[in-house]
Amino acid sequence: MRIAARGVGRSSRLIAGCAGVTVTVLGLLNTHTSDLNAPPEGLSPAPAFVLMPAGLALLVRVLPLAGPATRLRTGAAAVLALSAAVLGAAAISRHPAAGLATGLAGLALAGLDVRLLRIGRVAVRITDPLLLGAATIALVALVARLFTATGMMPLDLAGGLLLLTAGAVLARPEAEPPSAPDTADQRLVAELRDRQDFADTLLQSMNEAVMVLDANYRVIDVNRRWRELTGQPDDVREPPPLPPPGHGGDWLLPRADGTEVPVLATMAAIPDAAGAPRGYVATCVDIGSRKQAEEALSEHAAELERGNAQLAAANSQLAAALSFKNDLTSMLTHDVAQPISSIASLAELLCADWADLPEDIRLELSLKIDKNTRRLVKMMNDLQLLFRLDTGAVTARRVPVPLLEVVRAARAETAGADEVEIAIDEDLSALADRGHLAVVVENLLKNAIAHGAAPIRVGAERQDGTVLLRVQDSGAGIPEDLLPNLFGRFIRGAGLGLFIVRHLVEANGGSVRYEHAVPRGARLLVTLEAAPR
Image (cartoon, rainbow, N blue to C red; front, side, top):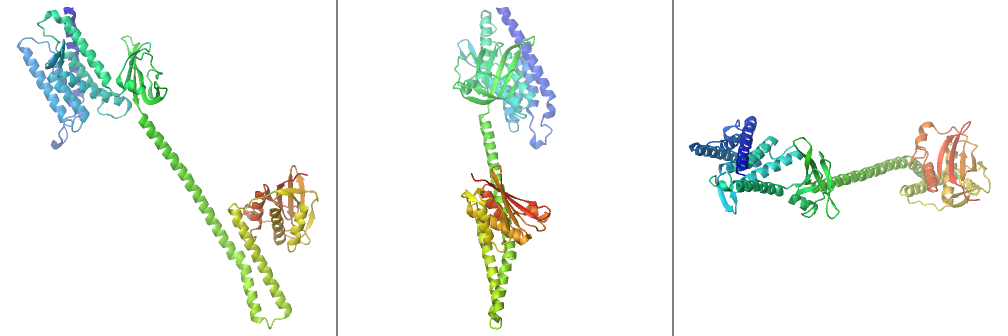
């Protein structure tokens, strides 16, 4: 047992010496990141530079010397370690995490032989909390760099610090003095127990949830954060669903209560000497707050999109209202102003020359005033109907309406429609609002009389459940440039008739269209639902 203990001690010192050499080389290779080239007033060494004296202190500490050289070795190691602690403290202002970790490691190396107290057979040294603090900072920085592009310190510095703390643990003196050969086995057991306690403390102190599994995915150990995150008991042996080895990314971690926690998960294999996995380490970082922030941002973006859509709709309504105002102003200044001007002129003439005008002239002027007044009243009625149509206040009460009866009544009410030819069966009826249909026919007849030529023919026929009403004149037809806006709100010189026709027909579930007549003329076609026979 003593021989084995001595072999373990030599191996530990050898590994610790290799760690010291590696740390020194890392510090030397990273001197280009030092701040020593800064101006004198900003002189502050980079933590990577501090690794050199710390690594040299660890190397000197494990040199196999005896006799008076032992004290020299201890003093030199203490001076180098204190230098590393001072340089680390000087770097805290510019590199808080790295400076603090290197300062703690330097102090731990300087006090490697100092024991605070003894609990049973276990010696509690001052280096234990210092090394734990330095290793925790380096490990947290290392884990953070696995998931983000930036972190508290570079990867080489974090790795060097972890290697330095591991070497310091191996370089600690045995639990019992060398003069007690009968307790070598106890010293080995105590040392192994210290290392196990250190590893357990390190695992439990991590803020990331960690689960260690064997090669068969059986749970070996979990830390405190894993139990908090999953709500699993301490003696859990069957792991929840985990990402495949090598996976790194978002994952939904199941909880014991059936809910899921969004995490950033990694699943890393622990290989043996042959490269085969001997176990796995699953690490999870809670990203619930980040997901909530992303959802809040998405909702905010959707709300902005809805607001933009509402603004676009409001702009469209404003543009339509502006267009309506401009069209209405144009019509009032042209179509409405003409009869008003004519009425005013004729009335002024009658008033001024009443006594000198013959009776027949006075009658003719009075009839012209009456005609323009009727025309103006018709325009006002059309405008009133226009406003009602534009606001959607017109509703249709559809009933069976005989087409022949409505067309004959409209011809009797329309000036100049005495010679209109009608060819409609008496039993042909459409399903429509009777008042609306009368206005439609009247406006179509007025349009044909005003802009077409005789003869004017009105016909209708049934077609597959619908009724097709035709109003055709023999004029020159409608010019091509007017066809796109033929049924629009305002066409100069045409009034509101066809616009009213379109809206009333659509309110009754029908449609209206235009086509050229053969050999000449204009034909307006209205399609309505046929009434039951």
